[in-house]
Length: 372
Ligand SMILES: *Cc1c(COP(=O)(O)O)cnc(C)c1O
Image 1: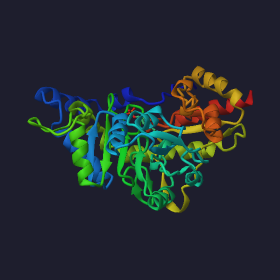
Image 2: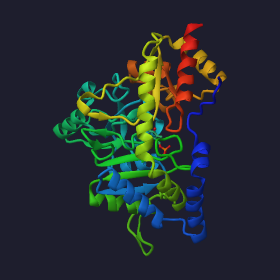
Image 3: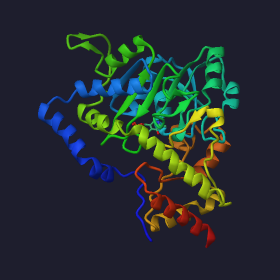
Image 4: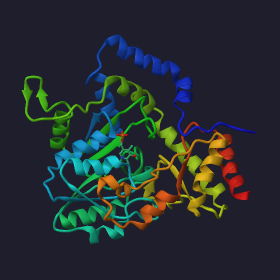
């Protein structure tokens, strides 16, 4: 039996929840109130309560969350910020565009920053660390926080992929000065377009974020600095509010599907599954992606083609690590694990609306490929 297995399935979600989504859309359209109105505040309150965060600030994207966070850190020329090259380019753009110098540390077995290698990357110029919680798994924040305290560094979390993920029972995005989230349609909680959020525990930072996201205006009459237009709009907020009710249920389902993959792909010696032990209940992963690694990278494209042929949609996160884009002038870093991941990973569908049949079909298609 042949199935279609989309990577994400907004149309299916919409067909199930059409009434709710249409009602949310209708409310905003009928009111004609689009910018910084009640839906945005309601959504902010939902997320801050959910994450047990003092503040949540709705933004137009995860990228702008990172940009505003970097902006608030007042980077001076020469300031070094430690992060990874196994990430979306926006993490690094935030450092570069706001005046800093990115310093890359390689990733470890769980695709997150290898905390054992952070200390040797710290210099007198280091001012901060941006850990990226890749694939919905929080980085080893105990070690990162301890290093940050020891060396007087700030932490900004790139939690774009990690809404709902936990470490020591604490939510992603609540460890650092600012936690940056994306609600891009491909993320665990995705809108019908771009959207994002910043979390912070500091009232001062929250106030400042609200001002810089809105052209530096404290009020219309009172512009206190130059800012940006980085607001979350009401239509997206109303759709996200509707989707938010299902977030925990979806995370449960993603974890269930990941477990099925863990178990049923374990026997295939040609691939490595992202089996990241959730040691002592320390980690709670949300599986924003489920990246398998092909042991022989020369077979990756053929596997992707075979899966495409079987109507299974996959992605590579990311085919080129950030430091390997020649025009970005960051090629001085030597990151073997990052490079081998880029050459070998394939993210297979793991979204919450997949049926067990679709998951089984995906497993069988991968098995069949390596049998032939
Ligand atoms: C998606 C993503 C971003 C950017 O978020 P947008 O909402 O698409 O701007 C940043 N960092 C990581 C790790 C991401 O996956």
